[in-house]
Image: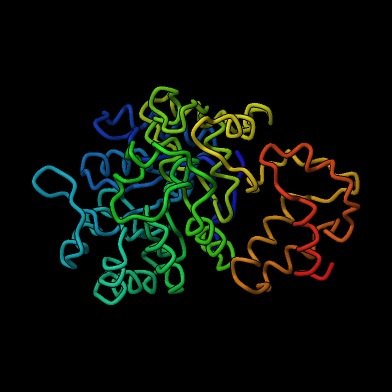
Length: 382
């Protein structure tokens, strides 16, 4: 298992994480089997969005004696009322839900305290200016949570939250269909058939801006909806009109700036094993470029996907990394020090480009790579 730094938190998470789906409505023995498999494979990040009390208790019991082996992404603002999940901003309910969570998980603290489901600017304003953020900051000060997170499906609201400087971790929905859709407060719009009736071209600029801003600020991203609820794995259900593999979906998400882990919505041990197997899959199995280029209703023409098909460069330039750092600088309107440092340690710089065009001939998305290398020289001075 490979591990990545979760932004500026100092936490290391496995590239493959585990969602709640595999634990809900399962017996304790089944939950324990999941936890055993995760420990064996090195899967250490678990998302806990559901407030289901049976799930929490079973997981807490299953982690006895090995709590330190797992990173818990525990959600604030989710409570269990009348036998079902409820999102809340009522502080008394938020506190009660968090205390119940710690008690049932048999732990004194969690690594990530995730402010749950902020999909509108109005909701973010209520959170940041109200009691919820004060409570989250208090929990962090008391070391009952190590970092403050926020979950969202809307890049506009998420970007506003990230720019506040208060958010350490963003849980965001990332897949090659959502990434083409403009920000919206209604999550259902992301998957509405009417929004895929006409051909879609290239990544939504707000989403790209969000990922690059997270990278610059050191906000780690944990990915949800990487498989689009499973629809992307089916040619019949996928709005792209072509099925992708689980490996391709995971690889796409892990290739986005600031992404640290993909939370797999594994409903069975087989689902979990498929996601775990990504770590040992060959590059050809993970490669999404050819599949994306062949999608009948979607086009990324001219947009660098950081897929690496441009390699090898005869002068050894890591073209994908140069392009990623260039995009980060352009998105900020300046060169952040961290970006300059990362560019500076590259063994070969854009100035070494001889404009042979070999990379452009290999690019599935017809990116103007030579032009990007020239821009990089202007921006970074080398």
